[in-house]
Amino acid sequence: MHPLLQGRLRPVLYFMIWLGIGAGLVALLVLLTPRPLNWALLFIVPLVIAYAFVCLSSWWVARAHPLGTTTPFRIVTSGAGAALQSAALWVVGAGLWAIAVGRMTGFSLPRDLMLRDLLVLFVAGIVLYVESLAAHYFLLAFDAAREAERRVLASQVSAREAELRALRAQLNPHFLFNSLNSISALAGSDPAAARNMCTLLADFLRTSLSLGSRGRVSLAEEIGLAERYLAIEQVRFGERLQVSRTVDPDAEACLVPPLLVQPLIENAVKHGVADQVEGGTVRIAARRLRDLLEVEVENSRDPEAPPRRGAGMGLDNVRRRLEAIDANHGRLAIERAERSFRVTLTLPAEIEATR
Image (cartoon, rainbow, N blue to C red; front, side, top):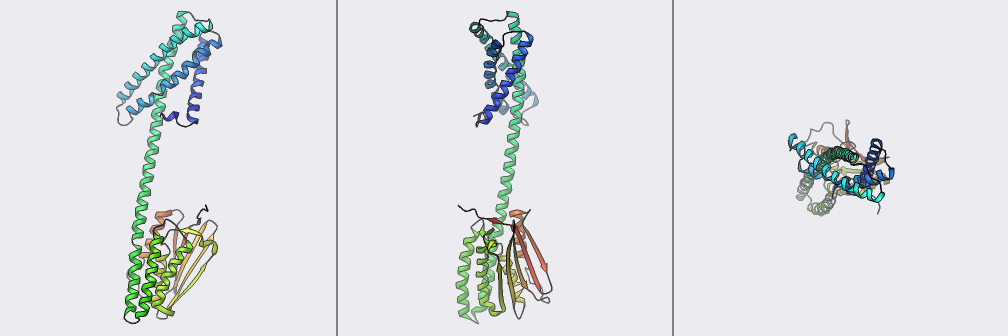
């Protein structure tokens, strides 16, 4: 179907414009030669409505000779030919209609004045068709621009989703390697603890796979996964690993990307607690500040401990995921003190809509 005839509003607006054109033609003909207004209206209005349908054909002319791939000469000649043919057809119909209107009203113009009116209509028909053709070229260019914009946005979304999938794919092996290292450390000295750790690891991996397949999870689920990981590490570290959790209830319902907080917890254990002989504390805090969700992960650290290999990979992964998800509102801030290390995540506070 023609795009101007789709929906309800477009056809109404289109034919209202043509009725305005018809009113202008009526005024022009009455000005050229005084005549009964009812005769002029009866003569012009049906002709204008009919020509409104004829001018819709310019859309197919414009599509057959698109801008950019058709030479200007070809566009001009095809448009001029279509305008001349349409105007000629309109004038022939106008002549026949003038005879019919004269018989219905009992009023007719002299032959020379009627020919002059038909000449005026012929010129007006050419102008109106050319204008219609120009309008359709503009419409097609506008639609092409919107389609190009849609393709660019779709490409950007696809690229972002591919990047997110790649970043997520790095997480599960990272979890597994860290946990297997912990189990390996206990296998010889404490087999019972190693078996317990294997059970905890199976539960952790099952939960991480379930959450990782979703687009958004609640902060409560995300922190619950982190606590499973900490339970695994507490088997290894015992009392050396202390956990402090301060999460506001209104923050727990906020939605976050899955497996976003987990790498921060791993870093806190691996690069903070593990480097201290007496152990340390991992503190998890979350609060909602109006439209923003703020999550903090803080750990104690040994200022004299040498930097570990691979430090910063988890933070870089989180930062890149934030940029891919929401570069305008997602932020990751790092604060290093002499005996502590704090990472603060700031995200839009989104709540799952209730059904």
